[in-house]
Image 1 (tube, one colour):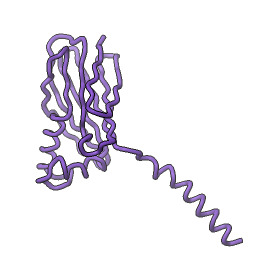
Image 2: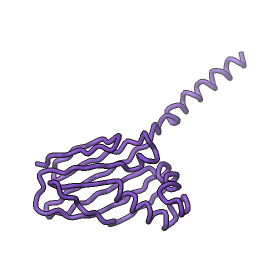
Image 3: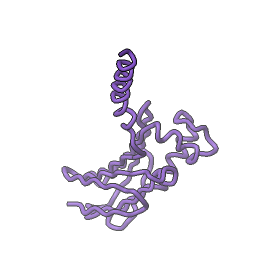
Length: 164
């Protein structure tokens, strides 16, 4: 009888822990591209810290594999610029780092740029972390005013969004 109770208790504990074990099923990144009426463009990249920190070994091989290392963060800023491309009506939108927010669970890297006029379409290519985590999925939300469109990237494809 005691063995049976221990077995049932172990099964209950295993079931209780199962959702936590499966909660993180893969690598992903979220980017938000916001186009303002004055032509300002904001790009915000969000990562889980536990995905990003180990990737620093390849992104910044001469720095410490730590989000606390300024050299690693400098390399990460450059890496993101090289792996995220934004075009508005066919013209590349130059981006520059505007802020970095490193938290315990999440890392946000924000970039700013400027477009001329009111673009009719934007084209995006993101290969962020795909060279490190081949199954990486990148999600990009494009926003202008009340318009929002969400894109998913699983390779090196370019996706275009027509803007209202």
